[in-house]
Image (cartoon, rainbow, N blue to C red; front, top):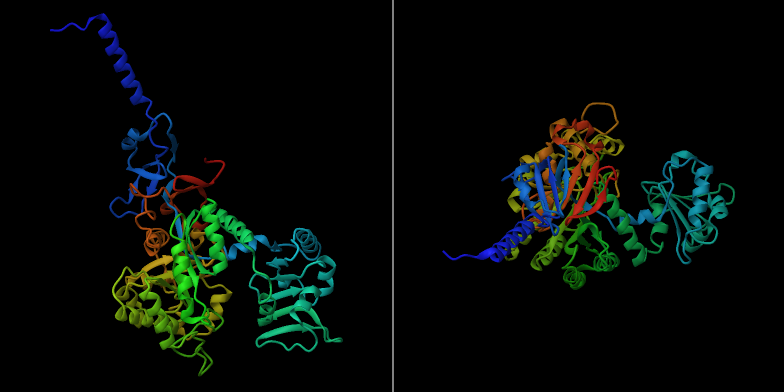
Length: 564
């Protein structure tokens, strides 16, 4: 037996100590969550208690004992203490950049007349850049008679730039003299159809108050936000989305100027939200716009921004503008309005489908839903097979004969859960339909039961961007804070269904199922922590559950100071 000698023994001891030291000082995962209620939205492993994250990816999902091997000297370990960890929400129909421009405007919501409103308008006016318009939003028209806030008052508060103020629904507008001059409104200007330009009873001059369709007159001329403003609005909207646990979204009607801003924001690393944009299809331009659409699609292939789909508006929405198969109540020939003739829509859809472009349709009434499904079926029968993931948004009224066609054609249905309660808008819709059709309004359960692939969206800017608000209303069919029975309670859906609609189903819709939407090893760490387990929460209190942490690819894009 060979003797190693005293020096050899010493060297071996040093080597063993170094080996042990290197093992115990391993950096491990970047982040480990333990002791949680981890809802994975993965059928193969629905629940876990621990998750490990490295380099923005999930590297472990399981129990607390198993995650120990991923804890090293540089690992941040967070005990959830029973709190809920789940995938980030995917809002499949919203307008983060377009609607986000409201953050750049003067918000008058909740202010008292006249002192608070006057002070806020005057303050906001000092920030308007040369060449821009003063834009005010969310002014409550019920605060005063329409003639109280007029152009003379506005001229005294905003006199160096054109001013346009609207209420929340944009059914009322107030403008100053500079705006009236730009618009060319004088005593001889006629009222538009379904609109009113209010006038002084003595002089006949406009008072600066516009109602109904007249509000569209200044909208047609107000300058669009520039690229810097659009990028700022995206950052502000994304910050709100992250606070609500949203990590991915759809820009539901994207114009070319928004595309430019998205590209610049993505290249600059400003995006804290994945965005899959639906490019707006302009009926006036026709097939000539296809090359521009394809070019923008090619440009948006990296980072967190993509532009793979096209948005078609088939009809209106409520207020009897949605297209219906049978006349509205009290009429014999009012069917609402379809934007396209069947043959025209079939040709557009077939062209887009032939170019492997995802199709996103606004279809509110049952006639629009049927027309959309018919056009998609026509495209499938006319073009070679490919990985189609077309979808219809809103689908407020669906004829029973069309429910099964969503599954048959592989067409997704995008729902807005927060609409499913009897507020004033829904009551007006109920009153416009017979009892049978009114009972099928926003029939979410019918869609799920029929096997449709259902996704969810807020259509923000709306009453709320918060997915938990939408989930609560879809589950309860009650408006939060409003007394009375549930509306169409047989259409209530379950928590699991709504969570899938907001996670895995949304990921699949935008071809992100291998990247996000569930908590699985290898996927991006798009994760949120909720202060309590939704499955143990009163359904009428789900909207009040706070998001404590939102991670996008392992990066904290929102954090509650008391938790993180």
